[in-house]
Each structure stands twice: as C-alpha cells, then as structure tokens.
Length: 435
Image 1 (spheres, rainbow, N blue to C red):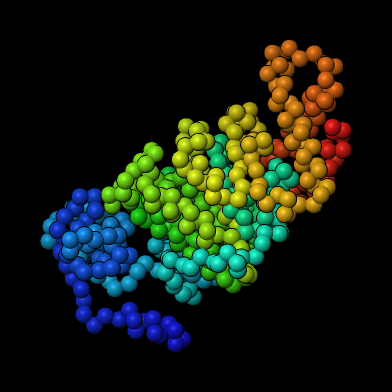
Image 2 (tube, rainbow, N blue to C red):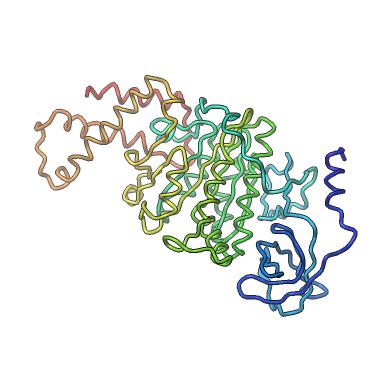
C-alpha cells in the first residue's frame, strides 16, 4: 500500500458508527442518519439481509436515500447505518472479458475479480487545452461509416434510430471490428432477455475477450442504471490514463436519460419537455465531456439514442445531436427494405471528417453523396414511371450507378473491410460519376 492510499484509508476511518432510523418511504426513503450526499448507507431489513443505498439529498434534518436494489417490506424504525464512504468501482487489466453489474459485481459466474484497485465514480474532466486534437481515423470495419462518415479516435458519435432498426447489431459489429486496444460496453436499461444474445451473437467470443461489459437492466432501480453508466466511463478513463485507445459504447443514452429523469422527479426538480428535468441535460453534457482525447490515450464514444416515435426532434435526440461530434441516422425505410446497416447517408454526418481523411477520399465521398442526392430528387417520379430516360444525363447516370452504390453501402453481419479496401471501392465508383 503506497502513502497516498494509506492517507486515504486514514481519512475514511471512523472510530464510531453513525446510525439512524427510517422515518418515511414516499419514493425516497427518509432516515435520521447524519450522512453526506453521495455517501453509502446500509438499510437493515432483517438479521439476514441488508440493502445497500446511497444518500442523494437531505432536508430538515432528514437524509433522503435510495437503495441500489428493490427493498421490499420496509417499515418505520428500521436501522440505517452510514458506511462512511462513497461508491467506488474496480479498475484494472483483469476486468477484460468480464461482465459486471452497476456496482462492479461479476455477473458471468467466473468468480471474483482479482488484481484490481478501486476508484470513485467522479473524475476530473480533462482541461480543453490538454486534449490532443482528433487526427487519426477510427476504423470500424463498416464501409458506409469508414468511407462516407469517417470517424476519428477520441470522437463522440451518436447512433440515432427508432426501435428495431439495428442499433444494437451495428454496435456489436463495430465492437468486433474496431481497431482499438480496449472496449468498454455499458448496456443501460435493456431488457434482460436481450443481454445474452448481445454478448453471444452481436459481440461474440472474440469481441468479449478485449471488452469490459457493464449491465443494468430495465427492471433495476434508476439509481443503479445511472451509476452503471458512470462506472463504464470510470473504467474507460482508467485505461485512457495508461495511454490506451479505448472504445466506450453506451446502449442506450435515451434510457440513461430516462433513469436520471426518474431521479430528478423524485428530488422535486421541475419537469420540462416530456418530463425531462434539468439534471438530465447536465448529466448528458457531463458524460460527453469525460470522453475524448487526453494528453495521451483516448476514449472514442459511441452511444445509441432511441428516437421515440421516430421523432428526431424529441428532447433527448435534439440534445444529444448538439453534444456529439457526429451522428449516424438509421432509417426505418431502409431497414424495411432489408438494407443493413440501415444508415441514411444524407442525414448522417461526421464533424471530424475533413480532419481524418485524404483529399482523394473526400472527393470520392462527395461524388457518392451526389449520386444518392440526385436519385433522391427524382425517386418519386421514377417510382410512378413519370421519369423518361434521356431527360437528364445526370439523372440517367445516377440511376445507373445507384445499385452499385447501394451494394457498397450494404454489408453482411461479420463482414469486415479495411480502410484501404473501402477507399479503393469508393474511388472506383466515383471515377464513373463525371458530375
């Protein structure tokens, strides 16, 4: 144990135990134990069972606590014991290949985690002047992204789409094909039955080997869902501090916002559009700012955003789009046609595209977008048979090349393409477009 750790343990030592009793249970649990916001407590339900909880506020001498798990049959007078410390999570190399819950406890049945230290969830955000610029491409293995929406290491990217259009599948494919050192995946608010298929089918054994997976399913308390996302970022920061290039995947940002909305309403915050409270947008901004490049090492963030009712102007979609450095829009119409990944190129954008691509690639990307845009202008006319071939040479050429472009944009699950192959295929198509 080093001197800093010894000093920290001395600061945490309390010779006396602080105890109190439950006084109320109206959403929040009110108790008389004197404790700081963020401090952990134990609610003694019986001689055999204690529930871990966290202080999230206080008023008029009453501490307001929320348990990390469902506490059944609570009653007035139950003992509450302050633990004298905040939530901390395990960090270390041995986390790779493990599946954990929102408190850092193993879920994969492989026993305890050995050789890890612990660190608190809160962490200092890197200074803007200490961040290295985004200058290297982040290769996903997906042609549509690497070619037309090229991302950079340290970029924050949002995958936007309604339910059932392939967000989680695309996330898993990127996790398997991305050229990075470590992947940290947070599954927040997912249905329990979807977790195992994601691990086995979308991620696979190869992807899991270099990944740390943190899971908080939909039925778990809102506090645990929020803490699970914060734990994932803390683990990613640990690897970044050691000079690693980390990929952080959060599925989904919308369900994280819903969990924070639940906490905000419990604390009495004023609701705004669709009931979202001010702390929701503060959490989203803070989450994004903890990602990115540091002086050495990087965290590339890819977050899915569940667009409610396919309304891309709803509050969370709108706020997330303003915070990320690029957005990938999945289109239900493309998914219904069997076009996967169902990326709508025209509505998607990488804000660092110019910083991480060469001039020939930018020219090829512009031409491919031109083919798609020209077809979009006459799509309705072509569908009803009103367009006459020969009316416009540009439209004729776009109709000729459209199947070639769509073949390039489509990709089967488990297919991987290098950045060089993607660029070569793009330039071959672009050479046939003279406009």
